[in-house]
Length: 341
Length: 264
Image 1: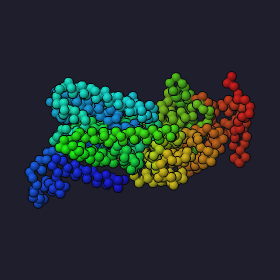
Image 2: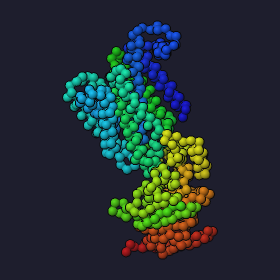
Image 3: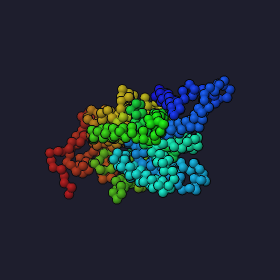
Image 4: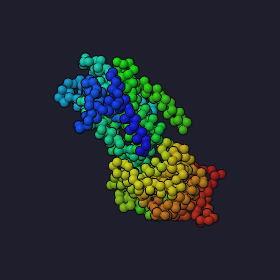
């Protein structure tokens, strides 16, 4: 357990350094380290960097990078949990419609003015959470047939419910006639909100949601043997499933609220982790969380550099790499199920 | 001690079990026999607590299982299910360790004691050599042994088995039941198992219980229950009973060349 965990932590550290360093202005890693250390009072570090660096680092880049890392961790960790709950490796917050439902909730909160004006940015994740729970409940009811959710029904139910939620979201956005460009960029998965406020607003939800998932490794393992055996092994199945769905949806909702709808991270990362360390959820959940943060950070670096100085929404990068990957997984799943049956 | 008192289970309008009462003492092996659809699996499922009975009571080691939490129940009763639709990529070790679930804290992390008991269960079932293999790659007999290992890792006084020898060849059937027998004697377990094969039931069980259409028609030693008249009627087939040359228990010989007794 410890070695894969150390590697994942190392990878995350590298991704964080890279993301903070690279951008319209490149900050050399050594300067970066000295700037951060200078924050600790008492260390004898003379500022020898341009004043603009401080503003770029502390006002723009750090909060952006932390929000991306939190988003990647939330989507990937909850993706792994959904896969365990649905007993289906194709479940992903985006593909099963949860992200779209959360998006609808978030947009509703933003377009209905009064709660937003009253409570500000902190209402958005609550509304997104409600939207996410509603969609996951609906998809679950539509897709589950006895022991597991078959691929086709799960994906079809997720796509249908997600498409419906997205359509309502688009309608609300057009009707509100606000900053359409900004809204569209949000919908495509660019962390368009800047500053520290979104990071602080998202953090508690993601921390609690992922914290709960981190304790659920054994429960998810047991669930892979079906609900009847899980119960006979001492797992209170109904209660456990409810807790896990609420936790995963909370993390997803907070991520979607501030970073938009970003697909496929929750699919690719847990899948790669599974290929590397095997199927046990006690490893899969923490490694997916760390790996998800790293993967989305790297995708975000790409999104910021490919068409520089223009920023691409990171959701475009994840979809461009994730969609082909998804098709590959689908084919593999189909060929293995047809050979075993 | 497992006590089943006037148990009635319905599936919708269908009566699956009707007023079944059965008692299994510690150290005793009781085999549940009967034709397909007689309710053997239903009885095992109800006894394990996953099926809520219409009426009746099940006591496991003294307490009514309906009043126990899922975790408490799993510390009293362990189930060896039929090996099908297992998560193929899980290793044997991971699978057997899950038997410790009812003893884990809220963080769900197994401790040294859980690992020890898992090692012990692998050793007892002779599956240590398979520990790191994915269960999807194992043969049916090996998978069944792994599920038995998981059940004894659960460290319960009562063991329920649902057709543990289904789909196994003769060698593996005998090997598995030898193992169950040995474990039951060594740890003084209360064992209730559904068995298809009447001859194996006769050899391995202390008592057999014959279920027909959801009703318990006879309970007793193999010699008492396995009589030609009773079995012919239950299985709608003419048959002979002979005696095992070494063990003296009854063996059932179906009379295949004659016509099956008609329903009327």
